[in-house]
Image (cartoon, rainbow, N blue to C red; front, side, top):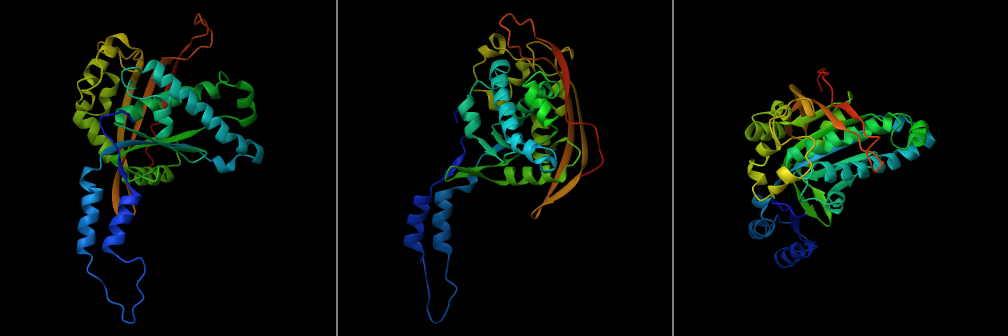
Length: 314
């Protein structure tokens, strides 16, 4: 992934070399003695370098009550999710050109952990995760309102989604992704039964530090986003020349893009032995739906909501 924060990759062969030289694969002595692990621990810590693990933003998306669909319709849900997923990637790359300038279709797909009825996407920052979720919600609305594969929509019925965004450590092992950001995201998603968009404390603090809070998403411009530290090596020419549908060049008029943003603290949950503070965010987005016509005659402006304002706890 050609971004400013590389995910640490744990190399199994190097770990095996350390284990074979500093440990025993099998030990069956008559008297079992607990060994001194200090040398092995030091060598493993030097190899893994846990302190270098970077924070990434994880966007969890889940199709609500997937298991309650009738048998045939249930088999089509992974197909529907892939359609929505692919359309969202295309929409992000076309209409959020500054934010997603370091992403391609392949890099997004390669940083996606599929669960069949949803999955977890790994991004550099929470604002990437929010932008992708906004676009996913736009595509979902186009599907539910019979603008995208209308006959398939008639077969499956409407799709309801719930979202979660977390920001924490991520690492890679054997081409799979692991880390607290994924674990916490799954815990938050599983606790929600109200189709909301929930974020953790780390995500809340990232927006607080970089944008003075989630609420400023409704007034922030792409110029101001380009001043965030994580974007210092981005191509600023795309601030002016690129399409940036969610965040405009000048001060946002709240008539287009993200027009409303609310955040509410709703409680805490336990993730293994960690207590997570959870916030509910609600965004309203006004944007043009994509059109298959070359002249854009079928373009229509719609407003969708990411999440909702239900505060019934978690």
